[in-house]
Image 1: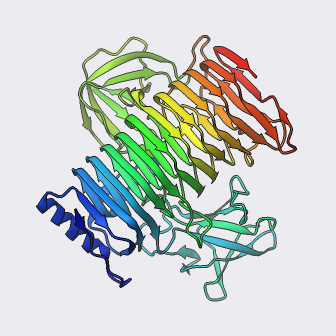
Image 2 (image 1 turned 30 degrees about the horizontal axis):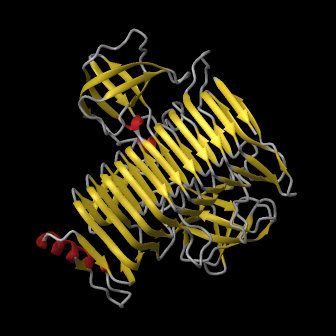
Image 3 (image 1 turned 180 degrees about the horizontal axis):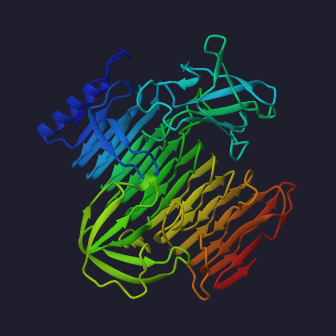
Length: 531
């Protein structure tokens, strides 16, 4: 085991100590690197590289812990606290195998959001106290003063309830990053939009999605455990094109002096394979979903003699994982109904958006240019989401699609939108595909859908624009032994296009203490409902 040298001097850049330890471990053949208890400050990256990151933003990243092609390595800490300064990406695992990371926490000295207070509004403009380091240049908010600073061209204000942490407004206020006015020496900011005074606390989001805490890319057998992520610009943990990921006792929670943890999802796993396990975790106060696990749809095109596969959402560009011999499933975007499978002989990246293919099989007669495809390797994914707590995640609790099997058990979910959302979409996000067998049991849905009127605790809702009689997108869904805590006797489940839905031994308790029969709305091939 190699021990990383700890420095009490806050100005010491621990990036150099990490590199020294990694080199020593590789030289001596050690498989474990240990961080003793203490606070470690990181001021610089050890690797500069461009990355495409699923559902985040592509850019050149300054990476601190760059693990490329590594095998059988354990990084562990004794409650080691990592503080990152600037726009750094803490961890990248790239084409690595059997990597384990544990016993650390991650935070940023300068957060990628502000927690503001509304002081006054006249209906046309609003005055807010914005604590932190910022200034205006020609009416534009500037924080990091680099090429990625406020690149979206807007700032977003999201009202929230400070005591409970609940998001208080579904959309917030999207304000162009111009014509802003600074008052009282960079303490007060006036924006040209009227805000509601009933919610005086607002998160100010001024950055995009460039530096998640962890990026797991094309890796295998990754284990993250006993880790706390207090903040990141984007998501806490992103996994893409990887096989077998275990997340155990992960905490994505705000630091003691903040109300928000990460500015997007806590966990986002895209087009992964094998077994995905998320156990014993806590995901609180994020500005997007708690957990999102999905496959990926793309569009197939024929241009002359060339076959092209096209990524359709800009945050899925560059994520090419095709292999010779892969099987592609073809389907229609409007119906989501598969009609054939074909095998690929060769994959060749063309551009960030286009993949060149050589097919072993002939295209079937049903094929029309622009039909949808998915690579079937990720369709065999098995997902277990067990014994987690999720609360105040701005959009939804758990999203799952594109898996052979899913087990969602013994979780507590308190979400402003859908508690569990089982979808499938080939028209906007292109997040695939069906779940063949899904078990939802033993969960507590604690006042879910408290903000979004159309949401429900459990929503099985593939985006099918044109229904085909007799076709069901998802397979068998079993919903049993769950508790639904609600204000009143409201709808707890909506489902359509599942071949079979079994709903039994579920309980609904209203705030009055009355226990009543849960209501559901289902349009499925077979429905079995028992109290």
